[in-house]
Amino acid sequence: KNEVEQSPQNLTAQEGEFITINCSYSVGISALHWLQQHPGGGIVSLFMLSSGKKKHGRLIATINIQEKHSSLHITASHPRDSAVYICAAPPQGGSEKLVFGKGTKLTVNP
Amino acid sequence: NAGVTQTPKFQVLKTGQSMTLQCAQDMNHEYMSWYRQDPGMGLRLIHYSVGAGITDQGEVPNGYNVSRSTTEDFPLRLLSAAPSQTSVYFCASSYSRYPNTGELFFGEGSRLTVL
Image (cartoon, rainbow over all chains, first blue to last red; front, side, top):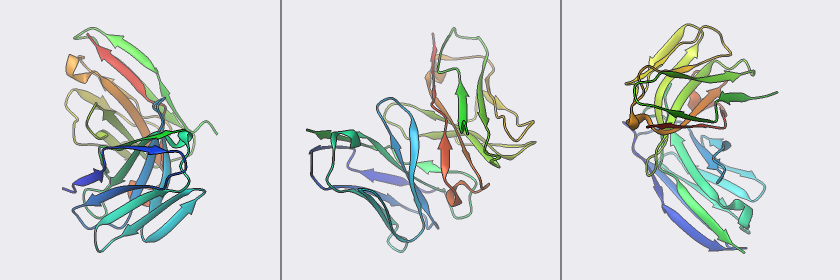
């Protein structure tokens, strides 16, 4: 079974700082998800990536399939980025299921 | 498009009562799934479906029942509620039967308390 580990568990930053959240997994996969859960509870998909890098506004996600590692970066962080960030991957390649990390709670102070 | 609609948002049950959490999507998605989210734990898969008439168990299926009679709807039934089922429940859908290959869409969540 794929073990999905996120670090750090909690992260506090000042507005404007560059943020990095890490996700590592134990089983080779083809792609993984990054999700965002706001304090209100709703979950939205940020990225699904299988290689290299994707960028959406101030958010950048990278993945290294060989090293079984992905990172989510936030440039010029803002208080509205405060949320829990979750990565998710299949338990093995070609699976109809997903295994989720426990999440990283980010707080950005003004 | 409404996306994924999940009801109710809040529910309080007594031990032994039964209830159904409703989930509907209007995106013609093949894949639908139910998760529970507990403090300090990641989302855990309860049941999933890859199409009408097809369901399968996830990581924590005990005490829950599902059916998929239409592409749109995927209700989750609690047969005899227990305090251990107090949790926040999310329904999610994806175009592909392999959720790792397409964007995930989540409902707003249902907070269930079992007394």
